[in-house]
Amino acid sequence: MKLIKLNSLLFLCLFSISCQSSTKKQTSTVATDGTSSKVELKKTPQDLSKYETAYFASGCFWCVEAVFESVKGVKEAVSGYSGGTEKNPTYQQVGAGNTSHAEAVMVYYDPKIVSFETLVRVFFGSQDPTQYNGQGPDIGAQYRSIAFYKNDEEKEIIERYIKQLEDKEIYSKPIVTQVAPFDKFWKAEDYHQDYEKRNPNNPYVKNVSIPRLKRFQEKYPELLKDNVH
Image (cartoon, rainbow, N blue to C red):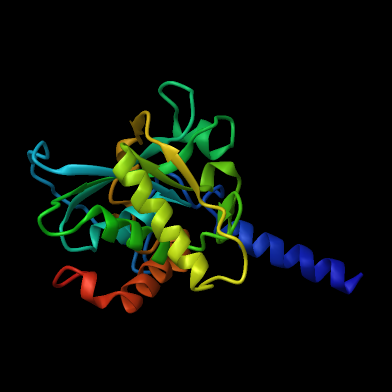
């Protein structure tokens, strides 16, 4: 009986900081002094038409967006939904697992500074590609790992890198990341954009997003922009 209660408590603790929990809402947390802990970011409109785009999914898009935006050569990362067939999906639908989409990011990058191959390295180096239909505490097909390709060259780069990881036996379990042709990206609601930066005291951000970002930054310091948070 004690073991059952302990397992139940562990499950509740994990669920309380998952992407599906109530911590992931359009609300700002309040500090102990009564002030809002939400950080307001003012972004000026920018022309992104000269940049290449790449698309990835590997769990909560708050985490994935923050990782890619810390990489040299990446101009912007946008949170959204991809990999499914439904039109105009909402966060409520995707987060509840009621669509075939996954939380994903669109990465705008300068190929003169960072290559698609390096972005693939970032993608695999910032997640556990052996976790099926989930990432960390986030469980479900909406959090599955997907490397999208727009052409045969990108597909070859992704598949070659997976083979390198397998040949070197980097992981003790099989890599389950999907390699899928890119079709359509649906931008997520505005309050999801730059969420990790704007809500540093959100329980999920503090316990999952920031630690995941820091682990990546410690592994690949040579890929980071100057003065990343």
